Image 1 (cartoon, rainbow, N blue to C red):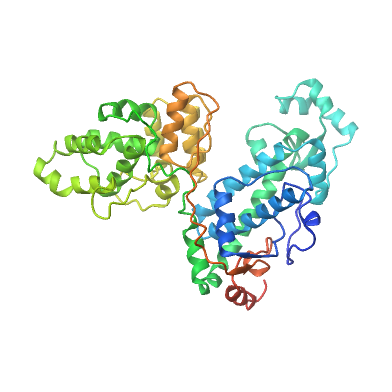
Image 2 (cartoon, rainbow, N blue to C red; image 1 turned 180 degrees about the vertical axis):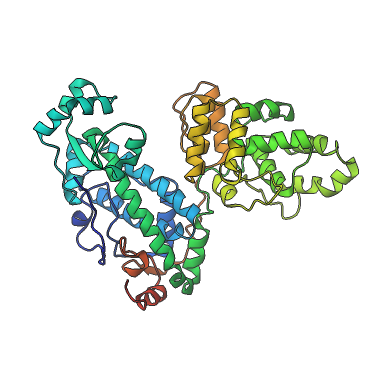
Amino acid sequence: MDLTLRRKVKKAVSGSLAELYSHDLQLYVLPPTCSISLAEFEEFAMERLKGNVQGSGTGQTEFELQMRKRDHISHFILRLAYCRSEELRRWLLAKELDLFRLRFHALSAEGVRLFLQGNKLDYDPIPAEEKSRLRDCLYESTYMLSSVQIETYEFYRVPFLDVLDLVRARKCFLSSGYAYIPSVDFISVLSSKFRDNLSHALVMTARQLPALEEDERLFLMLKGLHNTYTGDDYSINKNTTGVRPEELDSLSRKSFPLCMRQLHEHIRAHHHLKHGGRQQYGLFLKGIGVSLEDALRFWREEFTKLMDLDKFEKQYAYNIRHNYGKEGKRTNYTPYSCMKIIMGSVGPGDTHGCPFKHTDLPVLKQQLYNYNLPTADIQAVADLVSHGHCQVACMKYFEVTHKVVPDSIVHPNQYFVQSQKALAGKEGFKMDTGENSSLSSAPTQKIKMDDSDVWGDDFDVSALSTSAINAVNSHTEK
């Protein structure tokens, strides 16, 4: 059976909310058509970045329909913000795919049926006689299912390219270019379609970005959105006991993310860090509870192994006090988020940055080997890195070193907090997120979301101001 989504869509979503949003799970094939203010534009985007998009099954209350509408609009807003580079496209693709899978697994059997029916994804299970003929092959290839379950589950025949994850894991029977999968694994088919279509749509969207430059406010907002961290900024230390410099060696091995562990080991071995490393590591230490006095003592003791005290005080102490808000404008600087580190510039000889992004893969694998990670886990991390999934690789590193699956990690200091709680034996912990979006001051200009060309051939939507829409409309449709 070959499942295909509709292509060459060139019309926007219109109609009643009940018609448009009958189901919580969406494929985002059609663009929304509505007007929103710039304040709502930012609000919807920040809401999705924080992971606060709600799911509501197949209910039809006004609240549920409005939540689906927000979900629909916010998805397309993030397409605009995250289409401008390969790294950003990969990040959004991974996050949206995770959300899609989570929502699908939460559906009831009736919910799945309604979703497939509503999206015209027609499929038929293989006939009983074919299933009987292949029974032994199906049993051997789906080792997680018992012989009783083999009889219970329906099986579907799909192109093997649509379920490469199952093929890679040897969880399906292959024959003549097709994979036979049980209904329990059908999410792999939908995930593949969702990923392929969104990936193509992001590339097509990127080609139309120049049309946005006419509206400076919207363009600047979108350009900077990916650098906006929406969780706890760790500017206020919640560790009432504090962290002493004498504890850092032990903590770096147990609870530091790899990016901070390698910085700590470098300064301990070489007694110096370049400016980028001092900023990244120094603010991290501030966030985990190292006081200004202890920070000065830590850096002084290391640096004065290579230089005299007077040079340290003149060239380096000021910057440390500055990061703690005690010099200059007395700004309370916040530790770097994962996205800021990943997207930052790293040059030759630098030791800062994200090791899952900026370190050569053979060097990274050797580093993990030196930390005594099992070979299979090193390869699992390497596979994620080779596919550009930096933050997922970091989460895998956490899982391997702590024997606990973490919450989604988007900040090094969040990694540290989760590690400390995991080591303390506290299960099921959740991270608090800060509310730091400045939405109240946003302009109230209305943005029309009904242009089609900016999203390419497959996903046609825009969230452009009038001037940008006119610019896009002047293009010849592909």
